[in-house]
Picture (cartoon, protein in one colour):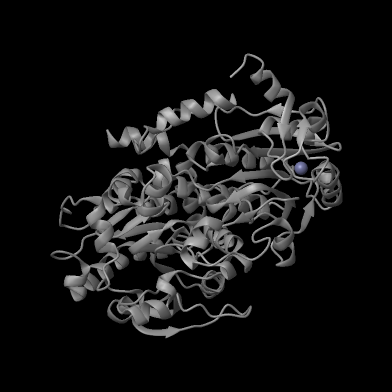
Length: 575
Ligand SMILES: [Zn+2]
């Protein structure tokens, strides 16, 4: 390489769309949009803020948080090394930059993600910073604008990264309740846990021209379906046609469009401060604390088993399914069908049932024991219709005053073309948000596989229980191995690194109680498993029934709010 090469590279850049060689200064003047073909190049967070906000109005929010490595994750490189490299190459401390500013004279709080920083992945620090931005918007009574760019949840932080989808969603829910506008602007690319939470559960969803958004990535869907993807799959224009976004906006129009939306909604904005929260009676508080406090997980001490062996047990075809438990743990199950929008998903079953003569709403993923059953149930992978059926039943339960019990057993969301076209990300996002504010007791049990956002869509709860040989993870061990090692045969190592077993997740505070399984595992003695599950459900549900709904919601929010700062706490607790 000659000495002039680096300078030449800085002066010129090649368009990723049409391969034209462009003068960098000219490209920058054109907001990094190719003047030849209109390709929108990715922007850093600082450059995005420079383009969007009124000059002189920017106030950066603090971004320093305690060090991050909640599960001591190591793949081929220790996680802290990857973090240091990302910091050095971007000059940022994390994958999001949050700020207060005005746009066209209208005040707002902005959170702008930066894809250069570990693929814009959502970890505890990113979740905490965006939550603080939302809380700042609530305090200031101004709209929140989220500019998303992300590959998904940060797998190096395991299930704690998954929890961030709930943490940020409940902050969005608080803005919704306060009548404050939330806007997300999808930029390229927006995938996974970000797509299935705050990118799509905002009031308005704008997509920058050329942006792609989806829950499952195109590579995964191609691998699973073995078919070529439709033209423009997951692109902004196709998302618009399928009703997934409000508008597609060229970069040069984005600032003006945001200013117009802020102006249009400003008149409706409430000016009165919110009604102060009533202080609860002390007795109620104690009752609630007792209901939410971790209780010991049964008499047996779970044997230490290799994480990969646990994964195989969790996937065992003989393992009891949701319908098995509805038969053995509950009485009088009446199944309710349909999302009322055009579908009934066989991978999600739900309805009213009795648990020791108390009426409850039970919703769970359904797999099967034979290949034919598994195929008919789509292997327990819910479609958007399944998530919307679950949403309908949750809301119905709250209206009827029924507690909700969810049984989680899914490899993950449906990695298919139609699931994406029907708005899988938004369907998951809406369920997560709704559960954070559902005014009735919610008890979740991870019974088999708790696979990423598809599992979380049923697992934002007052109490989260987990069968001893169940697993709960931000990504499958195979998927994690393929990305980070990169070889699927490293799945056993990935399973260990992800901390996806019940005892690990109990230590991290993601799970409240481990339900011990008999002898080898649940499939060896389904009757005894059902007996233990029933006892654990009653033990956890009954105290929740005495807690007033408003307090349940407040305590549920506290439960998920602490995951933003879980890092330091979890490590301290593990020592
Ligand atoms: Zn071009």
